[in-house]
Image (cartoon, rainbow, N blue to C red; front, side):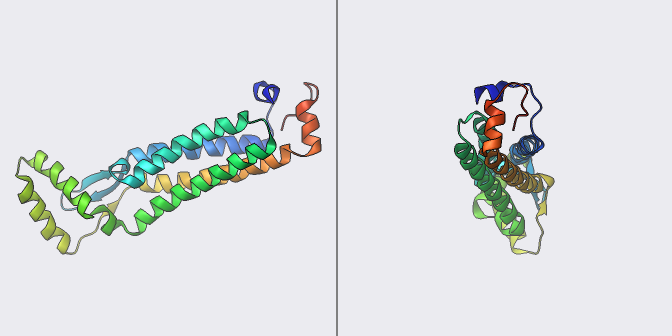
Length: 196
């Protein structure tokens, strides 16, 4: 197995596709969690992913995916690699579902009481007004008709989660294929064999 990891031989298409998909998806999850998910009226106050517990979770998933991808390649058995791939797939689906749920319930989620308090604190500091005055004005606005503007960061996380899930599926297929007797001979054979 160490020889396979260190090998300079060209990896199989399946393994390469899984690696590229997981890398792209993990980076999208991580970066998407750090940028703006929504802008909230009346002053279009930005809400970043990490302003919410959901964004913190999706950021952690993005990091876990990138670490898990490397760990999976270092594992000694096909069954362990397959288990890690399935776990990564589940993490990707979870991240996509978390972000999609926030997109669906955008108005309620991004103007929840905790978010209203955060927005009021930011606006009070920016406008040099008392917090209570800003908070009461926001309460009036939120009782009227308004619409939260969802931002690209939220959708980057959804797409990243789906890519991670696809990469997990590709990696699981690669792990299953590498457990076949033919693949074992290629991995354990001489240096001229094709690597899985």
